Length: 81
Image 1 (cartoon, rainbow, N blue to C red):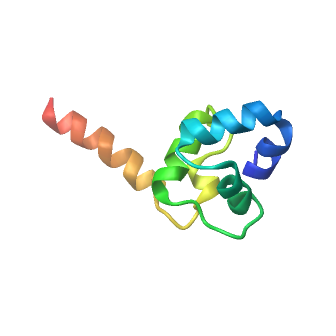
Image 2: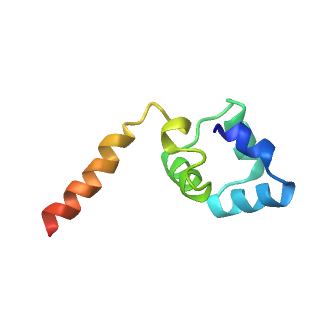
């Protein structure tokens, strides 16, 4: 699901709540959804989490190597054990 699809599926109060939980504004979400702005890495992570992975980091920012980051945290935790 794209961010635009998610936004269109939400009631205004739900969209406000998603923006607040993600640490941004509805206006910023719309700017990102329509392609006028890129989500920063932190916002991409927040939206991934707060949307229940309906919108993923990989979809929001395909230019970032998320697989490396996801695997490095697992490797670090295993090394520490």
